Length: 554
Image (cartoon, rainbow, N blue to C red; front, side, top):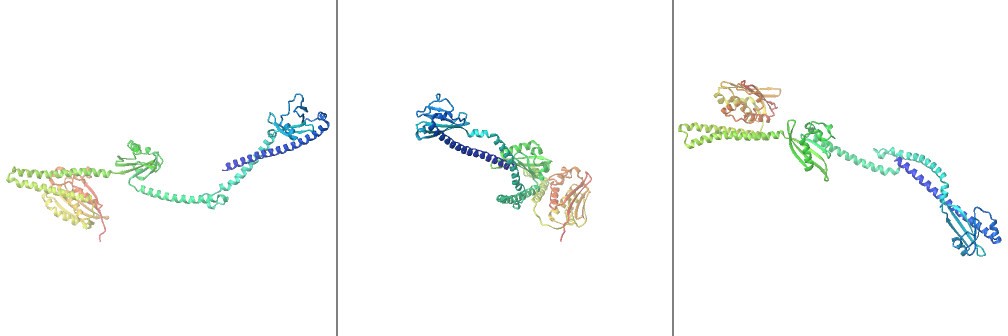
């Protein structure tokens, strides 16, 4: 701004100075030209009077280097010329000033020289005898006058420019000092030129609007950051060049990055080729979905192209952890296959026995035995269906009525029901410990105790024992079912709660187990937010402990 003011002042000064020189030169040139013409007319008038009285003798005796006198006869021939031989001169009848003098008695004209730096002024007057006396003088043109004054003009111009430069610098600095001191943060508190007041008011209004918009944007950014920070899904936003604009904590963990990677190219963070291919496909087609394993988990990646007014602006990458979903699908497939197998086995036995009886192959005395097989397999089928229904109910997480329940009382009830099954294998049942009062769904707690005790009897040895103990400690109620049976290998401790999993499949067949008992136990314990612990070795029995947080009861 200071430079512009400085240059403007200098330019104005030069233009004014040059214009002034031109005007003064023109005015002075015109003034002195008029004076010279008037003087020339006076000189001619004197010469005419003298010539009228003395004739040619006067003209010959006149000595003048400045003026040139020419006497022209009425026919245009030259009678006398003070600067040339009149005999060699051409006829002057056609000259402008001569013709005008012949007609009006007086004539004048001006003609330029070949060099354009001089011009000649002619004045003519008719004498009484009809001849014409002409006087002429050479005068410098305006161009010659300017060229003659060129050196002083340049000196004056340089002095004027130097002075103008100093003055322009001083003025521009003074003009800019208030402008440079303007506080744009508080535009209405400045004391500056009155002409700037509308501008400062406009700046103030724009500032208020900008602050308002920034506050809204900041609030939206904070809301966005809070939402994305608490998202379980990984979220990454890219610009049109593929650089990271935003990456939430879940994405930082997934891609092993941190917030400092914002601004970097995404392919330097995630280098796998399948992600690059997905980015290219999403940019071309608008979206792309693919699944991949990362950090031991299964993820679904959704990529979406972001457009604004038909122009590609960037990409959004959203990653969902679908490990549980994949596992659930796998378990459902396995469960369906196992259910089909488990249902088919007793049905085949029932159908086979019925067909043999229907065909008459079975002897009369063997019919009761075949009927017994049918009844046994039908009972097994009913038990299996009941267990499947229980698991389905547990999977649905349906709310069940809760009440204060004593685990010791439930354990004693279960032992009484299972006493016959235990008696067949000569297995002793014993319940000890505290009351173990907790708040829960009695039906599910009963299922826990029943299935643990049922398994302890089925997988026990002849003459073995099952001990059920209930204890209360540190705000917890623990139920432990310990047996002296065949035991469980340590590597299978985590598998025994899977559906249809059996440690000893041949023994399970003999015992009539469905393979769903411990799975029901696991789901029932999860419903009560409890924990299960297994302690067992092969041929050393097993101890399964279930612990619940103790709730206050009224």
